[in-house]
Image (cartoon, rainbow, N blue to C red; front, side, top):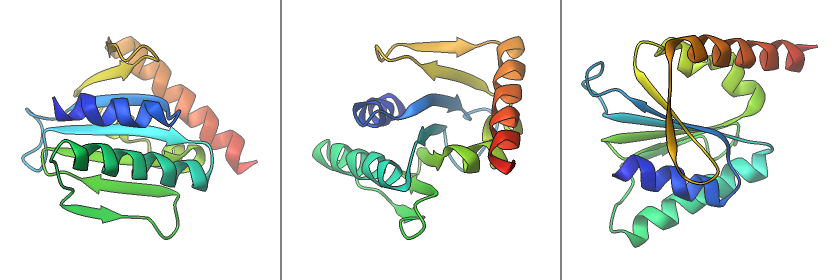
Length: 138
């Protein structure tokens, strides 16, 4: 599955809080979001470059990219999979997990295994993102 391959590439560059969101029943635009966090603009770009290179080696070309100038939120659009690579404070501000909270969300662990986040855990994750947002504003 392309979304898992993207997540593996992100994890190879030490991306944080990697999640897969299954949008197949919710969106006609894409099947999956892969969302992850980098700790700096340099890491955000390194994660994006790793994903681009890894997918190219698999024969999968990106359709559209955005955000390489500012490196706060880089978007890679593979049509069926859209990748969002955020700096922590930007991810907290936009909080895509909360916006799409009615979808199936899977957290990717360091081992590469995916674990489904249950509704109660989504609320916790959403709170955690809000706390990060508040902390970055102070």
